[in-house]
Image 1 (cartoon, helix red, strand yellow):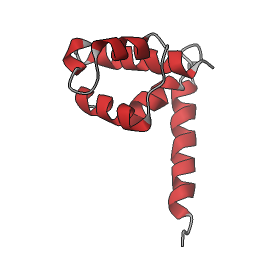
Image 2 (image 1 turned 135 degrees about the vertical axis):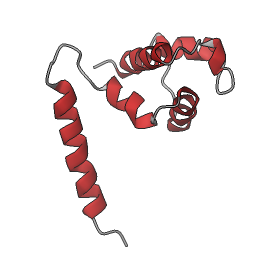
Image 3 (image 1 turned 180 degrees about the horizontal axis):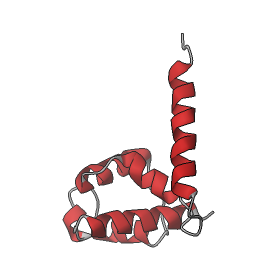
Length: 97
């Protein structure tokens, strides 16, 4: 799995869906950086994912989750959401001291 390329695909898809140009994201990053992310040449930090997602008015987990979906697997969406829900329940149920 090529995560940088997959994240780039997710970012490009979300950006176009929201009708946002690369230039319009200049409040969080340069057009050159956004372009390099979309082409899979760079990987963003968690902080940068959060900033970009905020500028696109979507949850950062949406960008990350979409990066892990296999478009060739018709059940991928339901399998991924089920796995995430199960793991989040486990984490929330864990006792931390």
